[in-house]
Image (cartoon, rainbow, N blue to C red; front, top):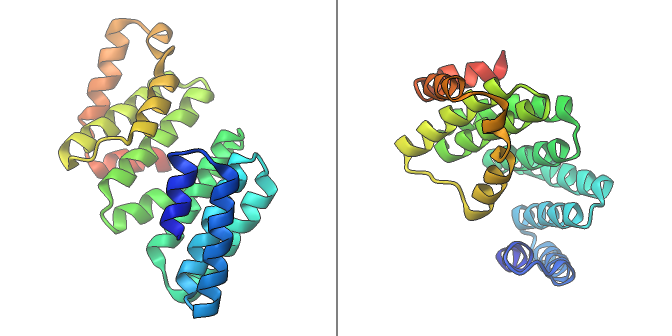
Length: 201
């Protein structure tokens, strides 16, 4: 049921139907006593609330899911849910909050060796750097993520690629070709740990 909720929301964009599926997932899972799927359904309802632009409700639902994940020891789900919160805060322009969460989650993803997730986190740091008018820093992070994705065989999802391309549209105009090449080369030369340390500094 949670998978149906996700597909309905993310592929079909039917928010109302997705919410009905999430509510049904909660009801069925509670009756069966399956705490993990209840938590996942609450997290999905949080994503639905983001789509509705009801951000207070989204925070409350994702926090509820986080608490449940902690209680049942679902460590990886904790990381994912925290990352969802960071994405929302970044989109809202709450960069200090988002950065604090990302600095926690990128280390957590490293510890569980999720290369694609680490690359995406680097890109998210880059999006914030762009928004704060630090194009050189952003480009270095994007290049580090690009190299990491190549080595790990973890390309962006189609949605991630569309968002990335939109964010980078004006970047070449902010520096000359030599500067662009310099920062891109510097970023791609970084090790995983060097890239993570760049986000923590």
